[in-house]
Image (cartoon, rainbow, N blue to C red):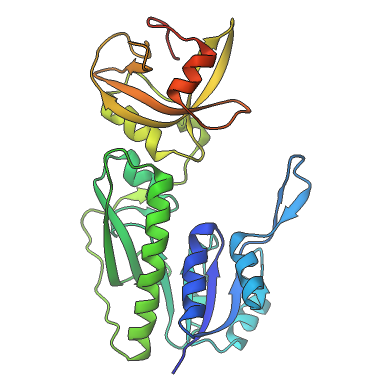
Length: 311
């Protein structure tokens, strides 16, 4: 018998799960998502979230509260009579009355191998830390931050040059399939939960713009992980003089390379850059106001030479 589901999510990462739940035949009573945000070149146009657009395509009722703390919002949520709520990157904290409202509780799709990387930015933090493996988990929500017991896990290798964007796309597909399977087991009353380990807890705090600038004095491995962990958004960056003026350059792809020199110094005509130890070769970059381009194409226009220095 199909479950009565309330779906709660906001970004593109959440969309495949919403779509998969609908395709599996469950009854989606409502979709909760963040309110439309200002966008456009002047920031004047209100843009609905990717989840809202998908819900409207599916013909599902959409709710966009700024908070779920009021008694009125909690009563409206309870009135939906959901069997289960599915939460994937919603972006709002769920108060206890919301968590306890669905008959079978709230299931959360989280992009890490809990208890490692609880919190807001698990994909970026895993790469920035040099992790070689992560995954998707389905857990039962409780009041703590990603502390609930885990029901299902799907692991995913992190390749040596994989970017956060590539891992994001891989995990959102894995997460959709995993959540549908979790709901199928919930229907059959065969979904079991295991308490998270108390050892190995780490927190994936939100990415701060202040940490996006590349520090060339760090070892090459750390610089490489920093670049790919922030790609494509918000993007690691540095500065260099081009045509007589200092210009910001976003770094989107890199790979570890051979070489040594003053940190930030260009070592050859392939855009290999010295780090505190070792070197990285830049593969894809983006000038301010431009599009992402291969490093070799960038060099044809920028005319950088060996011995010049990034800062």
